[in-house]
Amino acid sequence: MSDFDKVLDQRGMNSLKWEFTVRNGVPEQWDQTDPEQGEDQVLSMWVADMDFKTADPIVNALRKRVDRGIFGYAFITEVYLNAVQGWMKRRHGYPIEHDWIVPTIGIVPALSMIVRKFSSPGEKVLIQRPVYYPFSNAIKNNDRSVLCSPLKLENNRYQMDLEDLEEKAANPEVNLMILCTPHNPVGRAWSFEDIQKVGEICLKHQVLLVADEIHGDLIMPGHQFHSYGLLDPKLLENVIICTAPSKSF
Image 1 (tube, rainbow, N blue to C red):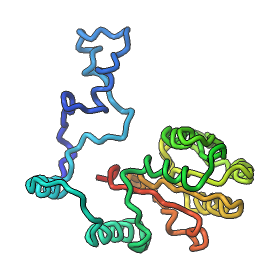
Image 2: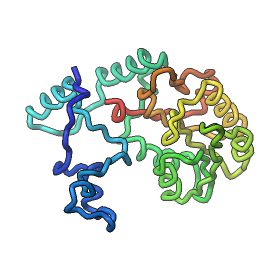
Image 3: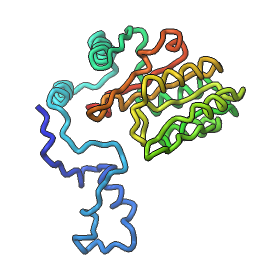
């Protein structure tokens, strides 16, 4: 059983989340000798890094591997594939096949690989700002340019501008779109209708869709995450879905 009440102090543990201010200097107007203004008063809310202890089954599995003392290359096993398949089915009702699973070292490196594979230098890649900034990095660092269809803030709630999105997707220089679902940082779990419309727009204009679903397990009560994998099979022929256990666990 995980303990979500115990506060763990990560300072002094080379924690990017908590030691960034120390290494880069806290704001000059702060008096670090004053306990009410010093670094201990900083609430580090800028990065998705949990302060909860990792679940015991994960720690125990890692400890078992560490105790062997050998860390050579390993195969992707049936146990791993079954675990991914089972989780997606149980958690999201999304049936997947083993040969659909392509392991990478992380979603951000995967985005760079996808950009290089499915677009050409000088082309535009469509995103919806405000959005997780590494999307832009994966595009610009690979000699492509960002084309943005901004989200609209209406009644204190972000919405997709689907009319603008379709106009941008029709640009002949656009062959790729990266969708964040659920959306980081605006916190929207997009409706089934939203993601279906995005899929239809991309299919209509022959734009390959990349759906980053890494936050799909972190949904507030009263809301629901709709995986792109639940859409019409014809739309699934035009998508790469990215997910990972790192946010969930």
